[in-house]
Length: 132
Image (cartoon, rainbow, N blue to C red; front, side, top):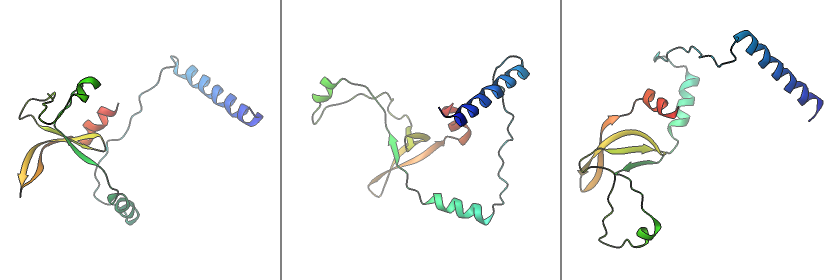
């Protein structure tokens, strides 16, 4: 390591030791954060930034259910085979965006095409809690 890197490391270690001495117990402290609110007023710069991300494509998928099978059984599947899923008939489907659960819904048919009617949208707060 260079002397500059060693000096930075030594300074960081000294700062940590001082912080632990001041805390008394060396444990992490909970940070108090302000509640996010929607002020409704955004600047033109913020609007431009928001417009930039609105055109980013994402993958949305609907999940009917899941199951685990071994490779031997997977290779034996053919036309007409039935695979049992972990969901009960009539239970809501999961709506995933880029693999993250954002809602639950039910299958509908519109003009001979399948669709999904959202029945329960997961709030941002709940999604953040699941990340922890």
